[in-house]
Amino acid sequence: MKNLTLGSNRTILVTGASGGIGKVLCARLASSGCRLVLSGRDSGNLQTLAHSLQKTSEPHFVLRADMNDENSIAEFAAGLEQSKIKLDGAVLMPPQPHRSNDPMPPTAVWQQLFQESFIGPLAVLRIAISHMAPEVTVGKRCKIVVVSGISSVQVLSHYATANVIRCAWVAEAKTLAFALGPKGIHINTLSLGGTLSKWYEDSVRERAAKSGKSFEEFLVEDTANVPLRKYGQPEEVATAIEGLLSPFTDHLTGLNIMHDGGFTRAY
Image 1: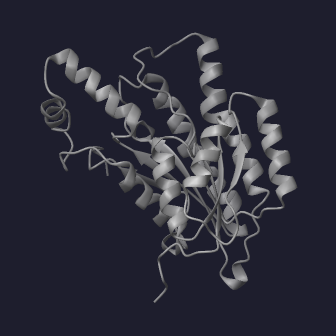
Image 2: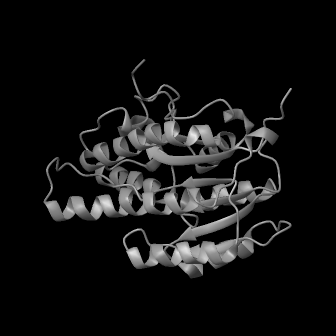
């Protein structure tokens, strides 16, 4: 029976590495023996993270990339080329639009959102794929995980712009599954429901304070429509991503995996 753990001696790119979910994910992957290429906007935070991670046979590598800046993305490409690093996988965590009730914002808003949350990350993904060298004949497959959100399959009125951009990622992953599959590169999306990363927990606490309730009381009410009666934890997201990078997905690609406690009502 094939071992479904991720295994060591693999090199994985993680974008948004110093974010709330990113830090937890990187700690988990490093503890599994993965060498990481850490990417994000703040080089200082990335360096601090790299020093905190469990050491591997090769040092973790830091490459800054600002999804809003084409020059920064070009520098990321040059840095990865100079490093001569070959990637076994990539976890793309595009910046996600937060709450918005405006279904038709001005063009400038759309342009900024698409650049930051889709166009820029897609350029980084294209660069990452060019540094992957799967060898299917010897069982070496490369895995890509794109972290999206539940509005990719279920429209949420208070996430108007996210409804569009997250759907774009699910569609792009399905398209890339056909293009990359014959090469031995797999791509799946992980759609998150409410996940208590720092920014989302802060949002819940703010709404709780406005309602005059404690955080715990508000959380019980806020998750009443979730079958598991809870929001996800960053550690649970990290476990799911590790699984999608592992041999578990050797015959899976182009899938959108729901990580929402059962919130989405659909077949």
